[in-house]
Image (tube, rainbow, N blue to C red; front, top):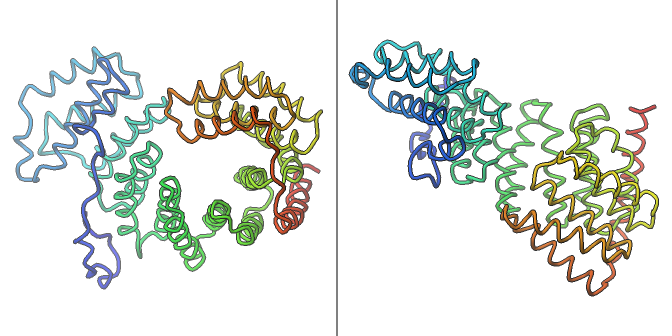
Length: 423
């Protein structure tokens, strides 16, 4: 992958020794996941278009003119017409058809735009394999752009293709160094999330700190709150209570109460307190921020956590209200299966805290039934542990005294910030 334009001294680094990013991780051939995700005539056309762009990209410029058979363009036009493609796909697919007709005379920028347009269509339709495949095709066509390499890495990470994701995020970092500090810092933060998902918390913290320090040193202000937010979550998972609260307080100051990620940070702080037994503080902040969650799925997850913390804190009326609204939203199928499994788990915990063992077992069984076919191992383990506790009627442990003290101080800050936006 060529080096970005910039300081010649930077280009003299031996970055050419870096391995090229992975094109696939477990598929037997490029685009196999696209075909599995989108079977049928249109899926076949999309796959063939991807294959053609990849072949053209990998072929030396002086050999491209003879790359495709003479009749390939006409055959593709017939396939596109017979695939019942949506109107927004016609233009991009016809750009690839022109590639077949005149492979030696291609408008490179138009081809990149066509790949990105197909990727955006996949995103809007929920076809993550289509989105990833054509974003990667665009990144290979324009290997000098760190933003495209970053996008491939993030999409691969979200699909659980961690080796592929790491290789593209590292490529993005190499390309962005000295040329695009926003993408450089963002790629490090995304790499931190990847290592966190893999359970390597020390590595996650190291690269997240790198991203945060870059955002401060290079004045990338929009990423500073995000980095502090991520560092709070990591410190909480590492049971570093003092640093967790310091990072959370700093993230709140950087975000401000009107930031779009402010409610998510409040929710994450509440979840951290719930995990360590500060139920009353968690219930206060969950309840305060609940009106800020307008999307049904986000509201549902917050309701489940509020139900648990309210039950554990002895606020029975609030617990019952959350149970009722959560059940209504679950019946309306507003959440994805993995999110719904998490909500059922939270409702099971809430019922267990309220000593409603039958209700707890019912909710836990619902969570287990949804988690098993999705291979959500973590939720399955938590459900099984909860069922063991319910059947043994084991009491929850009290939080450490120093954590309760820090939680109280931060809770007052959060509630005051919420009041400033709702007053």
